[in-house]
Image (cartoon, rainbow over all chains, first blue to last red; front, side):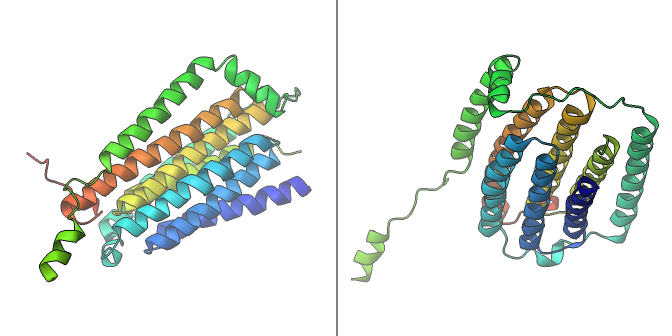
Length: 175
Length: 101
């Protein structure tokens, strides 16, 4: 009973955050609602007993990705406010796609019968570590290479294209 | 104890919300937020199956990889958006039509 109530609380926060992002026109508020959604998904992880994953979700997503998005907003948005609202034709298409997809997904979920597992999975951090270095060793190494590539690629892409003007020259001409 | 179905329905709702955000927004960063919604829906699905479906740890490990991929994707996408912004002074993706033939 308590589990159901906690699930409804977190699920409501996540869905409300999504709707708020959909209806909002302010990019900073969208980033705030994204953080609310990420925290509530982390709460659902805790509810399912995946404690390590919940902590990682808060650390990496809320502490890393969301802050990165806010920095992106700060660096790019100046005159975006009037352009954020979609036109009426787009809204019709959006509602059609969303309704069809949501109906199909929920019907397929409700009509499939998954037998609930009686086996409770081993769930400690050391088990996750063994799984990472055992069954998932190949993806683990690939992920490390991917992170290195993303680091170098982002640094290369975001570098300043034109050489930075030196302030000293301006100072000497002013003198 | 709750079963698998509520988690799957919530995951479907989050996925549809993410797709709707991607369709409706023109700001590139808002589209990135929609992608984060979709990735979170997928990870929630994986963890729910791991907990209530198969009863093994593989789903949690796979969700860990989803988080790693999302972080790398967000970094590279933001670098591309910064380049985009330096080139045409906006992040409105409708303005990025210079590759049109």
